[in-house]
Length: 338
Image 1 (cartoon, rainbow, N blue to C red):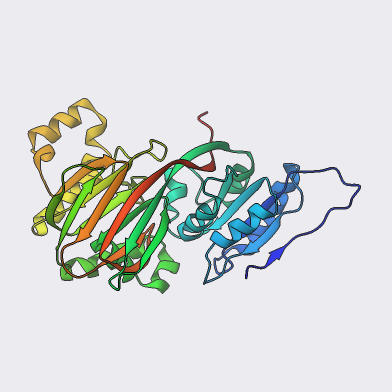
Image 2: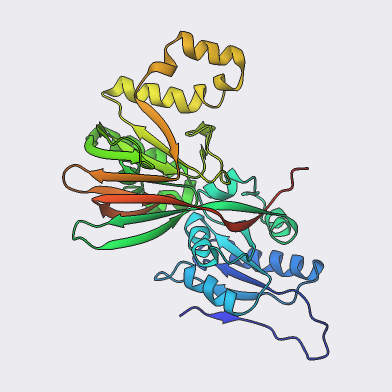
């Protein structure tokens, strides 16, 4: 059960807006987090914050439901992508705004929305005074090898295949020391041993495709750290899912994919001349990486089961998955357009 801490105001005190802070106590910087949020809450005219710890068994969803029952005006998720995703699952369709103070490693959702990931004070101010933006939520309904069905919420991207294997083999101690760079180490170890798998997939009610793939990703957002633009057209509020199929045949195929997401997508395709270069060099006709969009994605593994990940966290193995989009289901505090 979550532990909530609340300092009561007197009956004579004027009514002030209330905030609940759901935080991961295992993350570094919790003391600084308390200091920053308490200070900003006072400056913004809020009542004393309600502090709710996540647990290993429940990384945030139950705490978000508890916060909703406490009749607060704002919920702040303080942690990494796992905490933010879980809190979002509890706030989904509630209309209650969620502020984000990143104190994790990847912080992909925050990065994609322009939320400061290296300045705790600025992130705290933004959580209270930022612009409310309605973003989509991705729902992944998966089937386990034993036939059990589960439903998970995703804000960034989910994957079946080599990306999930890479995440499951990431060194936890290295991740604490160097952050998202630990995934690079895991990738270098996972790629040589990776084998493609046969998958059946389609977007919406379109044609069913069959192919041998290394990974299939379904995303709400497309940017990764290190100037990697995996999905250039992904938007968090367009009511669509973006599917990426990675199907390299050999090492050269992986090199092309790397060139695509680190050079063509973030650099060349931004200009008319760059797009001409892509066409002239045959980049637009290559099939190592395929994009498609829709409101739903269905994936079925041809044989056996494959590793599954959600927003950078491992979730075991699955034999099938159906992804659907819940448009504008979450309100997030983000920087203003100005």
